[in-house]
Length: 171
Image (tube, rainbow, N blue to C red):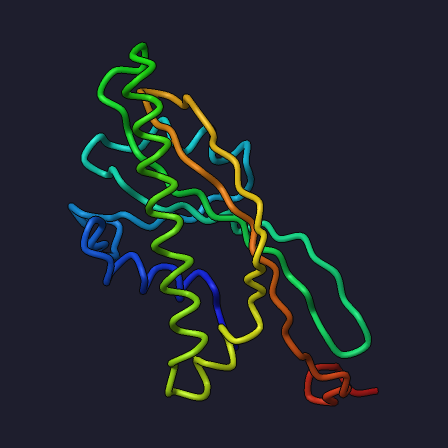
């Protein structure tokens, strides 16, 4: 099963400005999962200044289902810390930097959709919809000078309608 969070984490590991190192005791953790936007607000209070820039993904999903397809929506926040929260120029520059990281991620996602050779991984990223016109929004200030930009991405995943008898207790 394709997990978009693992895909985003892989990008954060390869992307030079982040160079994410996974693990609870990592000194360079730059990819994080949070439940919701409200969880994001609380989560930012735990971020260390040296975690800038970073990417945060909401684990809550909204979406829709059709006859054979699940259509989840993923929400990502690209976060940057400004040195001085009260400095309007620093805040604006932090938002611009966050937007630049988002754009770099979107470029990488497009490249993976086109070039991925591993069919199993390609299957996962192929159906994430990247439109010619996508919306994003800047967010912040959060606690301690954190600003960012968020974007939501829609996906389409096939699922099996078969009933598997091993999933159920037998009479």
